Amino acid sequence: MQNKCKRVSIEQIKTLMQKVPDAEIITRMSAIFQALQSDTRLKILFLLRHKEMCVCELEEELEVTQSAVSHGLRTLRQLDLVRVRREGKFTVYYIADEHVRTLIEMCLEHVEEKA
Image (cartoon, rainbow, N blue to C red; front, side, top):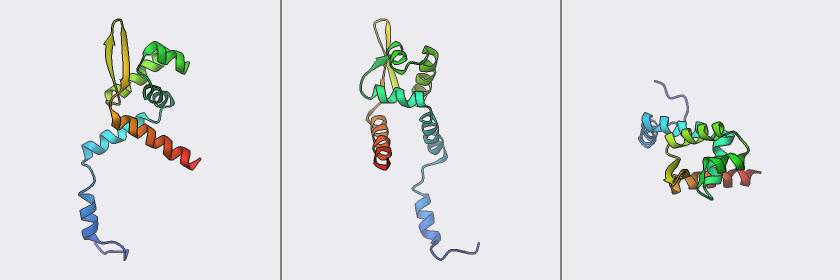
């Protein structure tokens, strides 16, 4: 194939492509970004980054139905963005780890910086 651009270095591109994660990782990352396109799921993450909460607390804070909260939490759990534990009769949700917290905080900083 003829190189049309003087800036293109086939060797550099090959080296850079080795740094791109494999298809499975890209697919999993894409699913996370798709999940963050939901206002409800994003608000859930923002709330959980400050406090562990049960469904009824999230429902009250977000002023949405239990169904909407449960659906959002199910998606976030499937992607391991939130985790759950039992506390007596309550199911308590919390941010999965510091990576998730950092992702949310960095995104917020980026958006606020551009505002």
